[in-house]
Image (cartoon, rainbow, N blue to C red):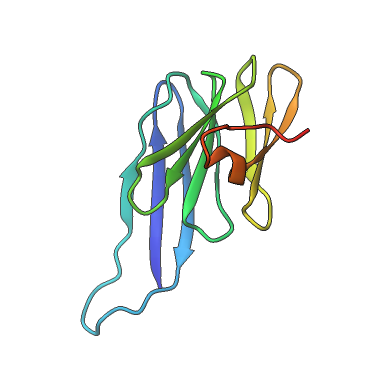
Length: 125
């Protein structure tokens, strides 16, 4: 079993998460954790979460945005804007098709990733 350790080292706070990924390793290879540093937020990171399939990471920040990252490469995939205050909490839905975020602006937003992947970043009504 291969472990993936991801750390968000941005302005202010460090957020880390761990995901287990099942992978066949050739005999004789030692198991090592791969570390990624994801950079892109302009404010402190307050929340991170892995998608149910372990392929993506969502982060919420004091810059009022959510960012979606590729968990394998660390590449930023998408920025979601809509909160008027710091994003304090983020989570994927169990099916990985939506993200919920809570902000210092006293709102909870549900993001439809199908719309977000088309570039709209639309919040569900």
